[in-house]
Amino acid sequence: MSQLEAKQPQPWHPYLVLLVAIILPGVGQVLNNAPMRGLTMVFFMLVLGVVTFQLASPDVSVIGQFAGGIFIYALSVMDAYLWAKVRYQVYKHSALI
Image (cartoon, one colour):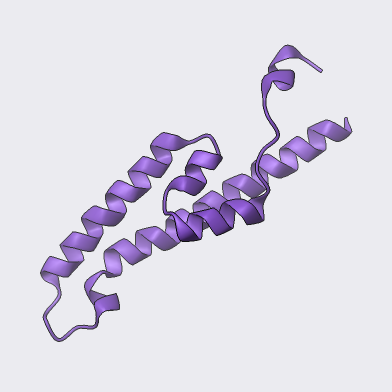
């Protein structure tokens, strides 16, 4: 095992990352060692939530008023889980070699 592999900590389990990403948007990416990606997701979630809130008519439901932010939130959760799954599988595969 090289020094680079020895320094890398074991990645978080994908289900734990999924749970954290659902509860705290953007933190799933932080657990995947991508804090700028998480910050970007939170930024666009807030911006698109505000934009759709401003553009939606008053008779639209709350879900419709914040549809842009909810869309980015859903992408953020899926992104955090998929990257955690990839990192976890690569780690397990490299541990077997």
